[in-house]
Amino acid sequence: MDGMNYAPVFSGTAAKVVGPGEFRFSVIGLDHGHVFAMTNGLLEAGAEIVGVYDDDRKKAEAFTERYPGVRLMEREEILSDNSIQLVVSAIRPDRRAGLGMEVMERGKHYFCDKPGMLRRKELEEVREACRRTGKKYMVYFGERVHVEGAVYAERLIKEGRIGRVVAINIMAPHRLNAPTRPEWFFDPERNGGILVDIGSHQYEQLLSYTGSKKAEVRYSAKGNKNTKDHPEFEDFGEAVIETDSGASCFVRVDWFTPDGLGAWGDGRVFIIGTEGTIEIRKYINVAESRTGDHVYIVDREGERHEEVTGKTGFPFFGEFILDCINGTDTAMDEEHVLESMRLAIEADEKAEKTGGR
Image (cartoon, rainbow, N blue to C red; front, side):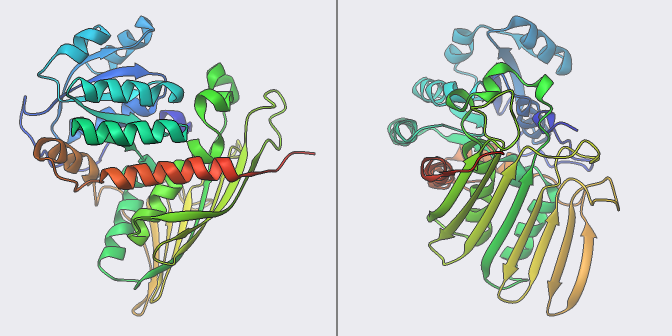
């Protein structure tokens, strides 16, 4: 019911790409619940978790209870351990880029929650750090890589089932649950605005589903329509993006999920191709089913509806592990990650203000 703690576990048998001890990671920073999703995905693919550190020791202790056998470690101890290949982090967003660059300079790959950075300066610094160190700076775009309906839709597109993608509409509402949020969450300087935070997922999906390398923000708007207790907070945003392949995308993000919805958000993606359409109902099928991963396909053969939970798994995590080991870019290459975040930052910078009454 709360997207902050969305942490899927594959209901089938996940393929392990490495054996015991072949790929070891530790966690630094537990400010966002997506760290559990990231950890689950890596463990399912065969990675071994070594230790955890957070400035708040109680958070770290709770993490070790959730994942028995994980050691409480000091930050420097993790960075100094040459047997640890990857650092995972859900540290506060304004601290993510700095930590990531330090991790890479210490000879490790880095996997952080979205948004991976908040400002253009950080984006360029990360780009240079990747080139200098040869290490990976990966961002967790869970709304594509950790949703089986989204994984299945991408498979259909790559198979050519709907032709060339020409337009995408993405609706990404989230439940606010304001009393459970930390104070920094409402501060765009520390958490990023809505077009950076939730928005980053959506631009990454656009690039993936269209196979595009670059895109431009044609229009964006953001504002506070109803969160009166936090006037600087942005609870609504929208953007229009056009890719270098000529595809267009409308994105709407908001914090207005009704209390009565049986999921934390009614996330939907509608993909228009030259020979068909795909709709993904990610987390719920309103008034029909409390399950997610509903995919609706219309093509030359007809119309069909598939519920794909347990059928695709989450291949991103195994691909990413092998990319770290082999120096490949199967899961996602550096430019894809950075272009997704560049679009997020640009959409935020260009956004018109839209307010409440």
